[in-house]
Amino acid sequence: MNTLLHMQGLTKEYGIEKAVNNVTFSLLKNTATALIGPNGAGKTTTLSMLAGLLKQTNGTIVMDGEITGDIRKEIGFLPQYPQFYSWLTALEFTEMAAKLSGVDPKMAKLEAEKTLEFVGLGDAKKKKTGTFSGGMRQRLGLAQAIVHKPLLLLLDEPVSALDPLGRREIMNLLKELQASTTILYSTHILNDAEEMTDQLLFLRKGKLVEQGSMREVREKYANPMYKIYFSNSNEAAQFVETSPWPAMQEGPIAFIHLEDAKPMMQEVLQVLANCNLSLSKVERASASLEEIFLQVVNKDE
Ligand code: ATP
Image (cartoon, rainbow, N blue to C red; front, side, top):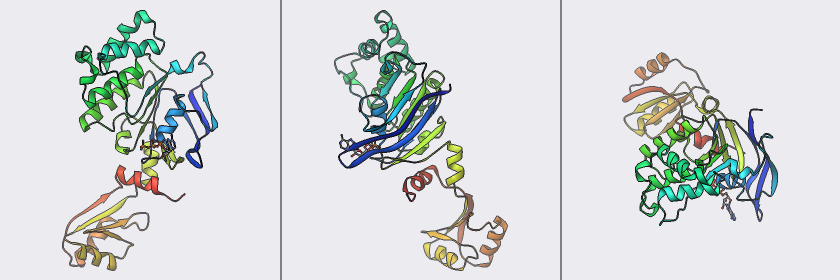
C-alpha cells in the first residue's frame, strides 16, 4: 500500500474552541506535504497530535499496517522552537537523541556524526549548543529529528526563523530526505512550499479549506489578468470607468481579470491607445503565491 498515514475526522477541542475541526487527509509514502495556514489555524495542534504529544478529542490516526512496534520510533519531530541543553555539544546532544529514539547505543555516536555532517554541522559538532546561531539551532533540530531515520518526519515551521539563504538550504535538505522518508511540515509562507511539495493542505480556523498539488491550486486560484500601470490613481480610475471590460483598480494600477472578459492583448492596447491616458506598462500576469494564499485562507466558508 502506498499510504503511510491516514487521519480521519481529527478534532481537538479546548473548551468550546475547536483548534482542529474534523480534519481528514492521507500522506502517501515518500511524499512531502505542507500544512499551510495563518497564525492560529491549527497547524501546531495537528502536528502535535500526529507526533503523539497531544491526544485528540475525536478522530483516528491510522499508520500503514506494516508498521509494528513502537510507532513513536518511526516518527521524527522538529518543534517550532526546539530546545537543547546548552552545555552539551551538538554531537553529544544528537547522540543522546539517537539513543532515546531507539538507535543501537553502539551505533548512536556514528549515526549522530553522519547526521550532523548531512545537515551541515560537521565542523561545529564539538561546539556547545548554547553558542549556536538561529540557523545552526534549526539544523541541529533537524538532526535530532532524523538521526534515527524515521518513516515520518514532522516539522513545525522548519524555515520560518531563517533568512532566505538558510530557508533554501533547509528546503534542499528536505528534498534529499524525501527519498527515504515521508514529510509533513507546516508553514505560513506558500513560496516555501513551491519547490518540493507534492500536496498542499490549507488550514483556516482549524478546518481544512483546500487541498491539492501546487499545480492544481495555481490553476484554481491563479486568476490570469492584465495589469495596466498608469502614472497615477486618477488615470487608473478614469480607465476603469470607461473600460469596455469589467476592470478594477488598486492605486495607479488597473486590472482586467480574464475570467470576467477575455480581450486579446491587442484589443486592450487599441483601447488604451485611444483613451489618451499616460501609462508605463501593460502586462499579462497571474496572482502571486502570496495573493493565492490570501484568497484561499479568506475564501467564504
Ligand atoms: P502559529 O502559526 O501561530 O504557530 P498554528 O496554526 O500552529 O499557529 P495552533 O498553535 O495549532 O495554531 O493553535 C490553534 C488554535 O488553538 C489557536 O486559536 C490557539 O489559541 C488554540 N490553542 C492552542 N493550544 C491551546 C491550549 N493549550 N489551550 C487553549 N487553546 C489552545
